Amino acid sequence: MSVSVNGYIKSTNGSTKLSTNFSVSEFACNDGSEAVFVAPALVTILQKIRTNFGTAVTITSAYRTPTYNTKVGGVSNSQHVLGTAADIVVSGVTPATVAAYAETLLPNTGGIGIYSSFTHVDVRETKSRWNG
Figure 1 (cartoon, helix red, strand yellow):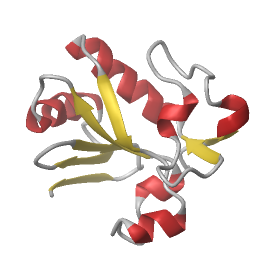
Figure 2 (cartoon, helix red, strand yellow):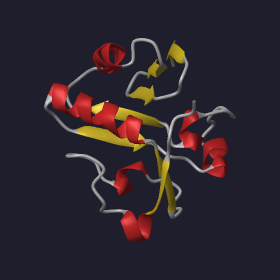
Figure 3 (cartoon, helix red, strand yellow):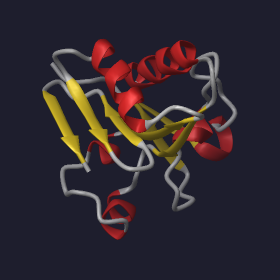
């Protein structure tokens, strides 16, 4: 079974709400491309993180085109290219604290990476954990 992913066009659907606090444009590739791919399961996880901490969740990188992923040094099998990952910053909360909460949401699946300034969260079917 694979994770479902929805496709959008930024100029047409950018303001479309995917949850209470997130819209399509927030998941767009930072290279300015029009295509946006996002897994509904990822939106659900991010919304739960936002609700839990009660403060802004900034997505610094979500969907990436393969070309942009290579440009920023992403791994070749990056979940970002699939639309199943987001790098996030939660206002006033350390990446390790965000990761610890994400662990309660994804105890047996998903990717959680702790970096110095952000937390990576993805909804892959297998479990993966790392420190970047």
